[in-house]
Image (cartoon, rainbow, N blue to C red):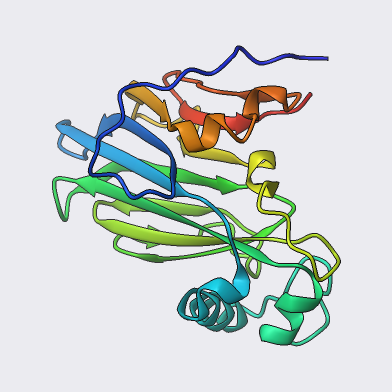
Length: 219
């Protein structure tokens, strides 16, 4: 059994939204060798029906990819489906600057748990492993990206703590010419109060030349 270090909160920017769980920042390389800054902000999960606009965006984007929900892959994708599986939706915002800059190799976005579905839209976004809503997203040039991860319980009651089973941040291939540096992770009190340190296999920070991420890596 692997036990994660006890997380501690860094100084929190007072302008952050009240529902912010974490902020992950890193630097990678543009095609011309200059620095590119990456910032990922994770927001607390909400029941799918708490934000009708968010649920509508998820349904529209996932249906367009031919996807459904993990616990009912063959069923239609609508509010009734999300209600039946106890859907909670987690928004993750990713910003990379300077604007309209080509990256030296793509940066994979870690947006939750591979067993759950996620959609993403925004600037410089690709999906090289496209497989419905169950695949990875990658940024190849800078801009703003918003993703929605759909966690499911299998019953009409959502579990807003399911986000703790996910992994979040940035990753690049080991054979990439780019590297990741200056990895910084900020967990807000909201995340710490969710007892992430009690999750076997949860790591509060993880920085290397190939990854800047937090979350579940396996017990």
